[in-house]
Length: 209
Image (cartoon, rainbow, N blue to C red):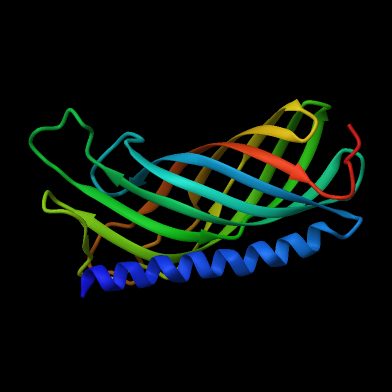
């Protein structure tokens, strides 16, 4: 039953991503938009869980569109599959714990071109919880508690462009609100993560460098 539930959740994620990919592709064909594909990895921790360090790795895959407002300013709207969570360090032999949380994030970003090869960004990210599992040494199992289905994060970032339409992304995210308000009698918890990614821009319009 648990395996079936996990497979069904993964199917829903893939289906949603295909629908969003088609939608963003249609937007990118408009002359005033550029399409974006991003792939990367997250280094995660959860503030409030009693652990420390960005020990939990996670996948990141995103699609988006960029609309230029001015030759230095643009707005980016995206949708991203994000794995977040926490875990004990590999050196910890006393306690074993892994917490995996899968989200669909919808970042809204204001981007400033400080230099033809550098952009600084500030954004806010609504985040929708898809699935969460905990492993205490016996494999991942569904949690006995239910965290909030929706929360918000702040997301400053910087992009470096080694090529005109290819960038290296470095982004930091932190929860603006706790994600476990529905869990009674527990310490507030907040996502804290760093994303490193490779971003590809495409479409009809070439944003002026």
